[in-house]
Image 1 (cartoon, rainbow, N blue to C red):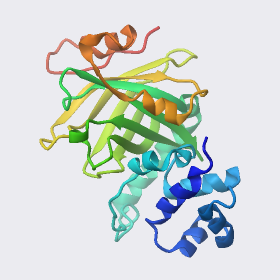
Image 2 (image 1 turned 120 degrees about the vertical axis):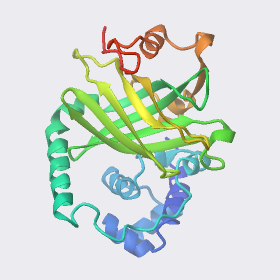
Image 3 (image 1 turned 180 degrees about the vertical axis):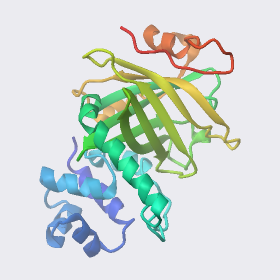
Length: 283
């Protein structure tokens, strides 16, 4: 962890909010102390760091990455605030909000066991003949599951210039022993993706199988679905090192583990050629 990168990255984050005093008020940090963080004169305590990261919507490990890499994970597009409260503005919206809260509350306790880091693999129509290997982090804060996904794109496919590593954030809910993840790209909010994974059938979580559905990243923007496999990782390796493993791998080059390829290429267990299913988790 390189603490000297914090000041540079924090200044970049603040460039999006404009009013530093108002920013400090919302975070709940003294302006004078926050200025010391910006100038590199001191480092925030862990509780203060969590407040800062939660406010800006970044991971506590991301904020210590090299400034160039950190900048590539952020959106460079300014967004106008919502002119209305999208859910609570109508009776039906309030009902949806209540139902969503009920699902989140119901899944919170069981979701904790899935928190951690993963590599995930799926076949994408953007790169014919290749498997995309991404990095995922699932965490649970205050009973709410959050997902952070990172994928590498070829320069010609990147959603923004110098953003070959795309970042996607979302929420995670565990319903009926199925993990359900809904996320969007921080670089380009033109679509949402959904991933559904079988829950772990045994105590130890190694591989999780499921389906992911999204929009092809090219100009054609074709909706597609693919089998996906999540591979559980340990905590000993830094985020920077884990991101080095993200990339595209040719299906026929034999570099990906056989258990993962078997799950990605497994035949549907429903005898209907028009229905696409995922293989269940197995030992």
